[in-house]
Amino acid sequence: MIRGLDHVGIAVRSIDDARGFWEALGLEITEIEEVPQEGVRVAMIPVGESRIELLEPTRDDSPIARFLESRGPGIHHLCVRSDDVESDDASLRDGGYRMLRPAPTVGAGGSRVQFVHPKSAGGVLLELSQPAAAHDHGGDGE
Image (cartoon, rainbow, N blue to C red; front, side):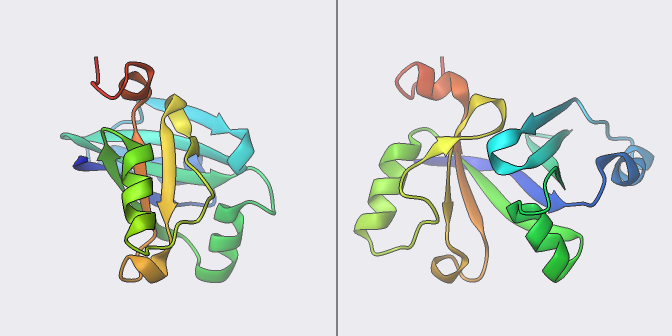
């Protein structure tokens, strides 16, 4: 079940160059992590109960590098927090919705993630994300 907005992913060419704007708003990056399997470096900026995720490519063939090449910097995806990403994935598939991956995978911070194809989500790339603590303990978040 979806529990709320987790983050908004923004593709940037450089986290170091992009961070100044967010810091000028009084926000700060609390963590930076590389996700090698995705070819991306991510910076998390808390904003209330949600976050902004800056996405910087680390390889020319990564999805973020391709996004930047075709569209330039900007909003890449919306991410909603799931308490059971496997179940949400199965429910969407059963409903005929198209997913980008055969099954959920490991994302930043050890979360379990799945992406809904934009053609199934009104033109928006939608990420489903279950925090690591929730999937390590059977989805109860404790």
